[in-house]
Length: 360
Image 1 (cartoon, rainbow, N blue to C red):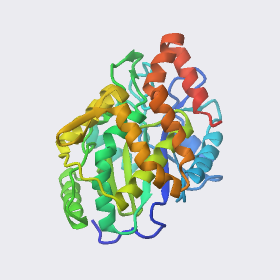
Image 2 (cartoon, helix red, strand yellow):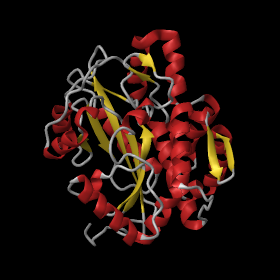
Image 3 (cartoon, helix red, strand yellow):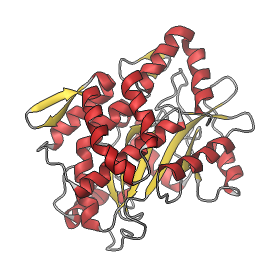
Image 4 (cartoon, helix red, strand yellow):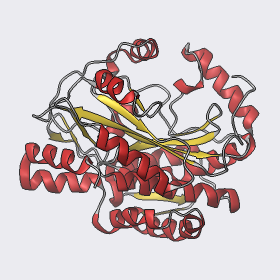
């Protein structure tokens, strides 16, 4: 890795949000038209729309935002602009229906990914990625280390992919089960300092035969090129307000960790297991909170929201946490998908997902 980085290039705790959305046609089947759609949107929204490895998937991304309200406005504009030419975005960790093997985008980076993943790469997995600006490399390492402790709860709140191939998988996030079969998709270790992170990244780059550290897809990672810590291990959300609520929570937790660091003593293996429990059971999971205690996810969410609230208020994101509080009270995306499927079947579920992906 290069010695160069962009930590400190933006205000500390600035916010950036990226959401991967599926594209579907009028019958709600996957529509491999991302390249055409990205080209259409590039003129009006330069640098804010890109393709992903699958041709039926589009990534929408904010610029550097001061807070959740700005991120909400930017992504709402992009979501409104995305439908067209018989294609609509759909927010879910996986397409719930039986779609078969998906079409890939032909770009040099994605050809490398395809070669690396081989037959593992068969279904689009859509995630929500949140970047928080860091003032310097060592602060970034400390915050990334600490945010690992919060990952299982964030994944329980964000779980939004219970169906695959038209069947209920029994998981709250089947997307997470798919991505765990990919290389370098995992909870990372704790790093002593930025130099140790660089050493690990350099060895992984060499071992994997990839170009740089952006091919290391940990659930949370320092991102020197952008000067941020990036939380990646969450399902894409259907409603934009929920995406922004999770981003506001992450921003507030990062602020808390800078001010009052967590020290629960959890080892990587325990965090990884809690991550599985969150993706399996969602808000019904029991999650590790220290080296000798586990707690129900819903109760832990209330504690975390209370701890995050003063920081969210200072950052102008307290109101943005309301959709997260609603998840705790009413259920996450996976629970809603199951309710809608029970009432309206698969076709009704797909129609509901498309309708709610439109920004209000």
